[in-house]
Amino acid sequence: MTRSDEVAPVAGRGEPIRVLIVDDHALIRRSLELALAAEADIEVVGEASDGREAVELAGRLLPDVVLMDVRMPKQDGIEATRAIKESVPSTRIIMLTVSDEEEDLFEAIKAGATGYLLKDVQLDEVPDAVRGVHEGQSLINPAMAAKLISEFANMSRKEAERPPQLPVPKLTEREMEVLRLVAKGMNNREIAKELFISENTVKNHVRNILEKLQLHSRMEAVVYAVRERLLEIT
Image 1 (tube, rainbow, N blue to C red):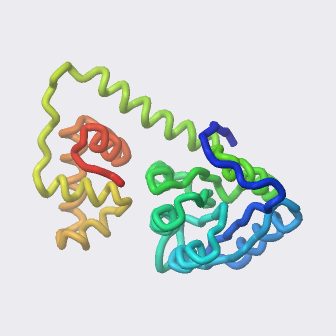
Image 2: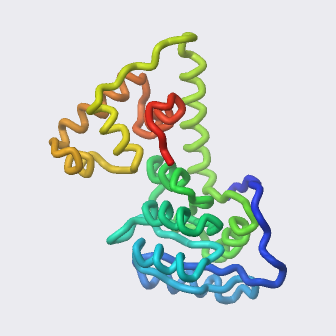
């Protein structure tokens, strides 16, 4: 794990760090609970098996840190993270997942997560991850940090290579609709359902968006669009 400092309030001395565990697998919740139970400065205050339950519990229990699975039924971890950060902004959220997909990483950070660990992390590393995030640090797996840095470096390089005062490529109204849904983390199937069009049509729109913006990935397209103020991500 790599850590980078952020400015954050420090909790009162002697108060245990209140943790909420969220995962749809009981065995994983139990393993995380056991890993944290032995720590005198950490208290597991609740568990949830899906995103909706996590949002409800977070609003009621006000945890300092949430260990949040990404893939869950009813409401996924990224949506739950977004909702929790709106209702309890002081809560720090660590995404714990088997996925290292770039889109998951970007969406988790955009939703407000301050930590992102793969589920193959050693359990004895979890308490330190909780402490680090609670103290205001950002925790991220080195491999995923490299992906994120690479994506933003590519964006900066492309912006630097673009001739001065070059007009922003104009997207059609439908392409803007598709881009907004991509920015919300929807896949092609979900976008097709939302817009009542076929998946092939969505693929064509995404391809056209990338070609117009001279980019290579959906993630780059969202970052580019936000920077150029083609759309706003809150």
